[in-house]
Image (cartoon, rainbow, N blue to C red; front, side, top):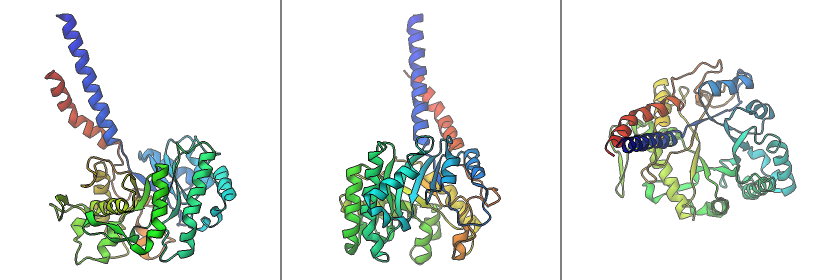
Length: 365
């Protein structure tokens, strides 16, 4: 009888631990924060990296291969989206220059810097940047090939941050579709990413959608504060605009043979002043609710955490117009603008909440 009881207790303990690990895995999908440098009053780079670490921010996006940042990140265990600026795209259509870029900006820093993605270009538009658009896919492929030649293509994914205004029809989300006149541009990029098994990056701002159409979009819907479903679409209920925009992108990808792609939300934020609806309270509500929300999924892809990067770490006083200066979640003096929880405590809380359920389930064995 003692042997049976011991075995039962061991089984209960194993089940309990496995449930905790499972919940840690689900809730461990933390948000990152974009680190821009367009300010003349920003802290020294090593202090910024220390600020990420002290606030449990495990992911960072930078927009060019700044070696001072890369050196400061060594050994930090912070996962990184490393940007290739749009100004570099034409040069990187030359495979030898793409190889040199990777040899200079990636190889010397890996693996002490955890480069997770390389973002080749940011929101390139074939409508407004026709010449640049011609360069994007060749540069993307050449950087991918250079990373593969370095033997790092399994560890570092090479992608691009797509311009979501190329979605011509975004409502309802199930009927999202890219504009016909840009398919020549987006389809080959999507095709390459599908072949390379690489997520696509997308900057998703409910703020800009709201201010461009406040007659049709309510502020609570944009801020995740709507008390009930606002939009029904083929049996799926949408209580916030972020989900609707992301699901519209998923639908658009499906229409361009990219339905297998994951989407990384490489920017999302709300300014605290300088424009329409840019209050401190609105911005705080948006960031707080976004951090909480992306631990789940969208109606189209439920229960799938959404890797998301907040824009941005600091207010940047050299940007224009005025509202662009005020996206920071920290002030340049390193003080937090809002009281945000970047993941650690919520992971523990959710696990703790489920401890009772785990023990109850184990006791029923």
